[in-house]
Image (cartoon, rainbow, N blue to C red):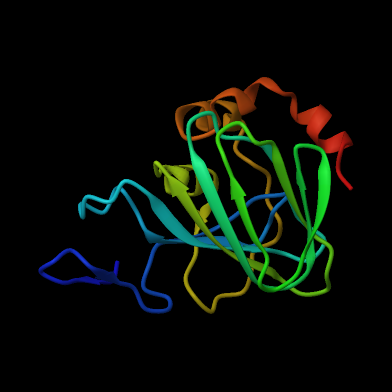
Length: 174
């Protein structure tokens, strides 16, 4: 994953990092650009995520993590603690621990964002629920989340989020 200089700086070029196709309802993919797992001593994780047209990231929150999102392509909305906010290129969202949030692609194209999580760990979730992706390959037919997704969430960065039911989440879809 990228190159590292003697002072610890990391440079990651396009298509040079782990990437995973994501299951429904987000579809799309996630790329991990900087990871606390790469042995370089970073406390955070960062990458990009593509949310496919008509798809969304379920409402969730992180018990102990801060999250920063920067949207650079597409349109949609974020529902943060029950309040709807438009997303256009250039939108930035900061989410402190426990902030409930959901991201919805309302546009005809992909909704693209860069994410940073501190402390890291989102990369473990993406790898556990996703399927390995090679840059340039066609998207797979939408696939379901693993049956043990609640366990994966609990063991990664979602803590209390697993206490809500999937059925409740799906009925709140916009």
